[in-house]
Image 1 (tube, rainbow, N blue to C red):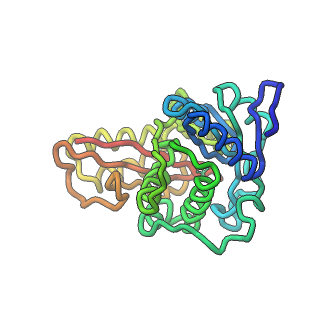
Image 2 (image 1 turned 45 degrees about the vertical axis):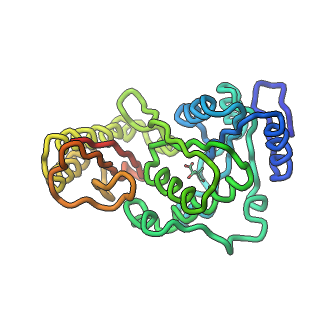
Image 3 (image 1 turned 180 degrees about the horizontal axis):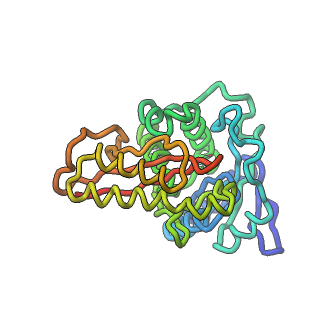
Length: 292
Ligand code: PAF
């Protein structure tokens, strides 16, 4: 382990070093919490570490920009990377260890073996990024096997990802508790995301409208407005607020992510409203719980 004395989190880069450290912790009676990330950390990520801290005595965060979840032409090469800033941020919230594997460490013999959660990966974002969730579940399964945590924390901002990982963990019986953490937001409601760095100042000023549109639609649905009407209003609001293409605004079953019938929500029903839209060249996603 590369222990740091400069206020950053200690790092390991190989699975073997990681296993030795995790084994030593478990032998000493510690529990291990895990926060997987692709780096470019913001306060949303740090809140995941803090949540993990509530549930485990030792925390590992991984930083790995996973090539298998990017399609050709997406931003794999330009995805923001700043290792030393990330390590300082992790130290500030008491993360015990950062795992920084190389692509060879994660995929030593390539990618013949993949993990696919069918159907849930093919809706919503899966329609626009068909490779994406298969890359996510493949790397998260590998990371779980490397880290062997007791608990892992994922942000609700990536709600579809969170539900897919919950399903993968159930189906493959990983002995890991999956926790969702609330979305960290800027003052205007914009969900924090590493890709917000791509927004120009003008785009950033308008970007909060995504959360506002979903919030308004959730209010309308909660008083019995038909989904097709509330969703159309939200799409129109996004277009008026400077968003270009709206990939989707959808109301789905909160667990299975499948579409709901175009009927007013029944009393007490809880559903999930998700949206994805383009602000300039940046694709933003967000979601909100909806209750009648
Ligand atoms: O949410 C992310 O940052 C990534 O999809 C994850 C879970 C770290 C897998 O690469």
